[in-house]
Length: 564
Image (tube, rainbow, N blue to C red; front, side, top):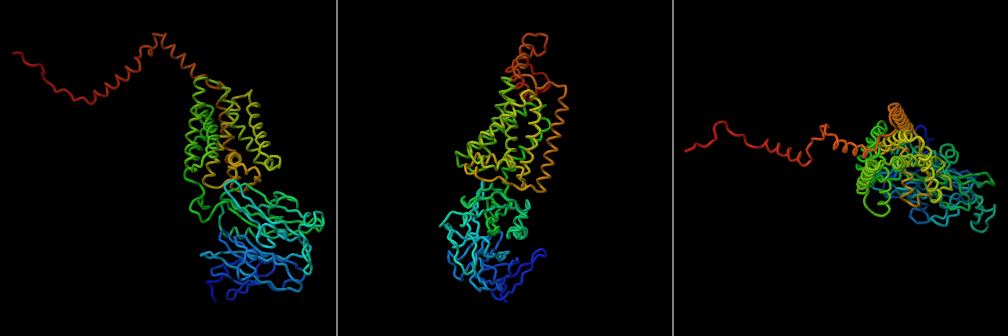
């Protein structure tokens, strides 16, 4: 036996065991049974399925790996319209009358061994055929889902299905009529399934893929995101979640016969396992970790002491206000690298904080400062509102409707709290300051809560993001971080309200205090500060004292010359 060509890897107790016959380059499958195995070069390995029931009219064979490509082909010689290559791929076998055996070929061109899980699924003549009306991709009948992703969105595409038919019949025409007797009556339910957070293991993926292969398991395990009719474009976009495993599948449903069939599921982590930069195992950049950690330390201070240290809070608010808009501006108008943009954003944010503090010190415009504070809290509340299922309503896929609604929510907060500015300020300190800790945690490990604000930033940066469905997992890590965030926010708000009870709502105007103090010093001769020398004389005297420290000491004794 040549084990270098083909090797059975493992079986799990929870996986139905297949009857596997392993000969030299040969593998036998059983209907509806998952099989774990490992593929090695060279290509191909022959696979077969025997004893196919007579009531089965077509089969869908699917094979999955984590990130290495495998190829499944009708023929030993690869042809574009007879093979599929990828880490989630498969073929449809339409059976002839009396046919009980199917054969195909498997292989990989990857230099490393590829671990796979595969299954052949049977369907009857009443079931719709996934990809049966394919006009876009290479295969004549293409049950595959094609996935493409970038930093902002993940897009899936699939070919329309066709109505089912018996073995000895011709397939129904795809484009003859548009009534209920043709494929246009079919509906497509798009499902989404999240893998455990921060779990990039191959075993976890291959096990969870089994929940997304067959119709009953998909409906029981995944979340239905959208239903498409036969007249709609078979393309759906989702927000990308780098480092988070997601499985997508589509179930086509025939309402006339109440039958369904599943496409071949596809998965993504929205990152690469092989690239040196942006690798799934090390997504967090060092610059992001440094920036978010320093920002979180400042935010934590603001959470508990922001109202007492008013100028520090104004710097924090000004930093957020100007830094956010500056990052959007340089990202949309320039092609600078991420690290450079982050440094420039930190500089611009610091300048914004200094400007807001200077405006308060010189002019004492409390309403202007509190407008900025209220807008930051309003921005956060509006972001949270669109983080809910409200953000997936089709009406908000229009940028105009979205940004007008978002702005109205953000502006409503300072208006509502205009009569109690101190409460508004303390709420902003507690909520926004504690949320900076959540953003810092996200730079070290994945958490869905960071996308409360990141989704809005993405929408401002990318015009195509408006069509993406915003869906994130909410698992154990998120519950823990949500609890910590809530405890920090409540503790900070409660502490500041209790400490500021009986105190003036806000500190007095700094410039007026400084001016009054200067006038008092000029007119009051009894004030010791009145007799203080000017700054120039004080600096000159201090410099003279420093020089005396380095002057060589005079020797003791008489230094007067003798008189002759």
